[in-house]
Length: 85
Image (cartoon, rainbow, N blue to C red; front, top):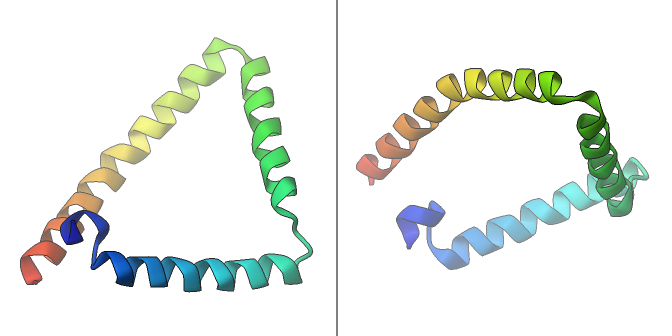
């Protein structure tokens, strides 16, 4: 379980709580409401759905292009982190 989570479950939970609190403080200082974020995401999905299939295809190609770099780097870093323990 520790390999999947990147640490002990309790440690990961504590880090998530602390990080969530810090992000919450920052968002509060910026006067951003969680509903604002949800509405923004909904608007983006609506916007994407109105663009048509060509644009969606382009977005998927861009996603795949980025994933070609990001996923192997993430995988190598994850394996190196696991091996160093």
